[in-house]
Image (cartoon, rainbow, N blue to C red; front, side, top):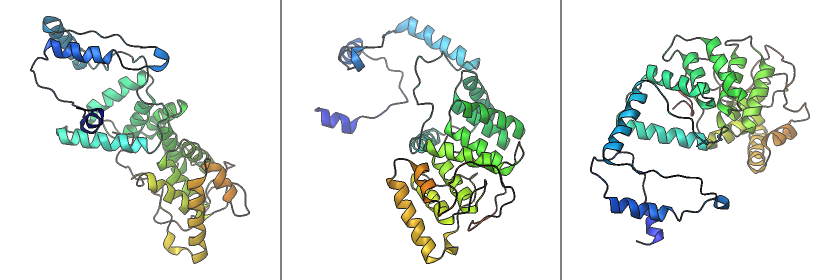
Length: 312
């Protein structure tokens, strides 16, 4: 087999038979792995091979720890970056849906709640965001906006973009806190800067409707939402979509022009602020409560929603 065929035909195996692996095969694999490159030749690994009774004992101990609710030893390094950006969040969610669906694994909210709490105690920001969502929607526990906000804020403090987006959603809806459009605007901006598509959609609504003490700019709001939709569809708990059907031809043309500019720009927020049509930049300012929505479809009622890209 040549290297090109090996690359094309490789696959990840996650289910195994009980047939023992021949010792010679193990030696051959380990000998090849010893030649794997590492940055600055650090070679940061130690390999232990066990079989027979030692392997049986290891499996027994692992099973006992899992049954006791132990999430395992702390990792020496993070598998995923703490601020995972779009479209990587969406890809990870799609993989999880396909994998567990194909295995026929049923949803178990109580088990998920236990696992998220264990991970959150170890500082996992994604687990904190998921705990917030479970408390927010009453999954595995009674719905509790204050508890949800607590977990979302803990995740946000660690730089987690989905948690930051959820805090902003709660501020925009007055859920678990007094409504604060300025705080919501700031939160959506920050999560948008991290590349989160869901936050860009929500920021588009705020911009289009003029919430948060800014001048309403429906074309810019639509452009933001179209940019977000290119990465992933709007989440079920998102703020309403901007209604392009009510646009004039000039507004439609400007929205398309801004969308092209947003796609080209290395700094989305700078491009957004520059696009403000002769008004204040779209930055966080003091709240202006009760400002009506402009060119927005539907009502923002804040219903409970299924999991977002990180709640998988």
